[in-house]
Length: 75
Image 1 (cartoon, one colour):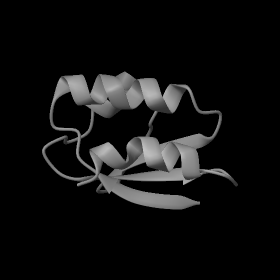
Image 2: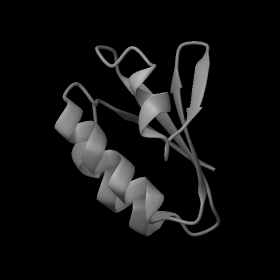
Image 3: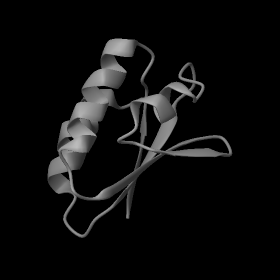
Image 4: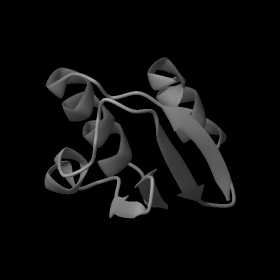
């Protein structure tokens, strides 16, 4: 598992983030406080408090490629 902090304050960034995560076969979760949603679900993401940094958890053996794509969202 790989974990990183990101920021998704604008709707366009959420759309970009979901496009990247949906292209990956790994399980990817997004956490905000006590809430956890599927990072491939745009509706789930919009249910979170996007004004705060979020934690992405990637469950995959080889996640270097997805991590490099998600670095532009780093908080």
